[in-house]
Image 1 (spheres, rainbow, N blue to C red):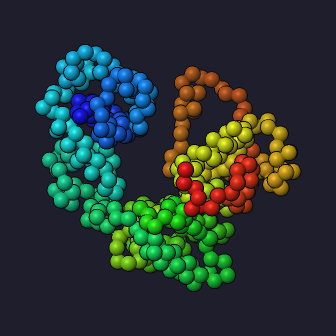
Image 2: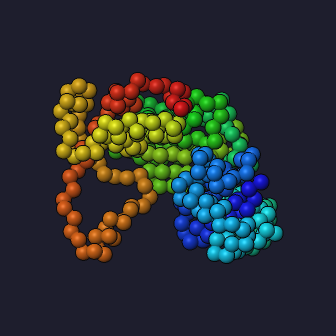
Image 3: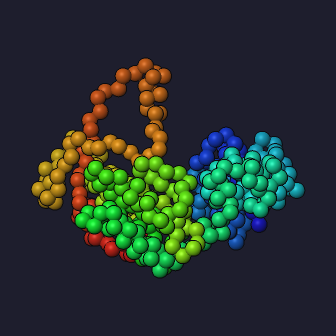
Length: 362
């Protein structure tokens, strides 16, 4: 059912991936997986009148072109000329193999394609000389790294980490939370996500990574770590993010989730002329009069916000555009950031009743 549409989406995903358009490739792959799970045949009428998960306006338009052009997809030159009916199964199978390879730690679309073109069809086929060290570690520990982690195991990890940090500094141990589904009190999690505060004059990351149950690093920077740890002899994925005290409440709210709850709160913020992120809550209008908010909430406004970002790179699109057109932009007014000291204060500012982490599923 829907085999030729699936083949078309698979081919488009591959085309976008080869062109370096990873976000578009991901969108096509998501649409493909959604169509695979349908128990009915897609028609133009269904596309127009039914919201199919994973299929947005752009992809829907392309599928309508496909379905309304007349002959079968495989006979339409210029739309999917590379796909013949006998190729449909192989294209879908290739996408499954590529998806498997991309689920390995440190493997992107280009590496997955290289492995496929070398004739590899399973993780057991891949040779060590065709891997980086991190990729090989990911392959060797693939099953364990993709197992769900029982809540009790993370609780043990949490207890031992707290004891370890108290030994380093009994008076003022590093403040941290294990966030994500664990903080939402789920019975299992995919990984262990640690959000910690940078202490003045100390290296919070170094103190956490001295924990003997964190054993391998895929990547390690001053603010972000991705690696392997575990307390029960099983390899688990462990991520550490270091944030400033000012950004910590926002990061705690964001990385606790759920995703749907974050989207809900950001929508509330926008309706009030605010912008909420994992780093800050700011007025979208720099000329906004905050005096009423300050008086009613007891919160202060930081007029010189810290612009440091946890992102590994910066977006230079605006600067490139300015250079290309030789335009000098007008001075930009600084965003005014609201300083809070807890998650609860964020809820208060947004006028939303506070929800405990376990109640943040929407």
